[in-house]
Amino acid sequence: MRRKHVEIRIVGVTFVIAVVVIIALYLRTNSGAKRSGNPVAAKDLSGQTAASQPTQTSSQAAQPTLNRTQTQSEPQTETQGQTTAPQLTNTKIVTVGDSFTYGNPVGPGYSWPKWIADHLGVPVTNQGKVGQTSQDVLAHFSQDVVAAKPGRVIIFVGDGDVIKRVSETDSQNAIKTMVARARAHHIIPILALPLPYPGFQLSIKTLRDWISHYAKEEKLQTLDFATVLFNSKGEYLKGMSSDGKYPSLQGYEAMGKYAVGVLGQSEGMNVRGSAGIR
Image 1 (tube, rainbow, N blue to C red):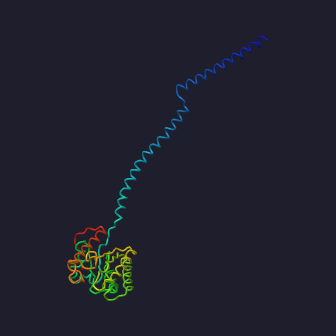
Image 2: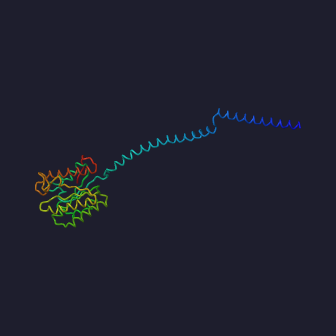
């Protein structure tokens, strides 16, 4: 009986000691955590810091990339702006028509094509011939225009057609054919409106109206020399004609200045310099 008592005490003491040890270990562990901080929290913070640094670096690297993109886009914008006014690579011009293109009665050396050559600074070939109709010009178009390989052709017909009684249909078809043939050979066609002529004003006005409408439909450039030669009544301005039919020397000069202004402005070319004319 006494022996059992002793064993019970030993067990009790052992239990107490175990409890004390457990409490001591707990206190020690808790105390260490306070001194060193939360290792889990420290690990998470470390992980977040390590992850955030590459993101910031990537953002910093993206900024120069954005700058490079902006730098590259600026010249592209300028280039696009320049292409809105394309420059002709082939500046040669051929003019075809009747007496008003040839320069009757002063001669081709004082004609409006001569003015273009001298003041626009481009080569010009004057294929105007006295008395020609649109049919005549069409018949020589391949030889006079296509074979010359110009960048532009100025087609100035109509007065000869009306005076020689060419039908409206034939005149229109000839003009359409010349425009189509020029385009087929990469030549830019430009239409000049026929000028008022004594005794044929009504018929010429009808043809002028048709050419203006056709040019708008086909998006063709036009030249209207009447704006610098005639008043609102269809009469030559003072000094622009010596006989009331054809322009004078002063009249052809006015036509030349007008053509140089229109062609030079539309193509962004310098209105100066000189070039030969044949």
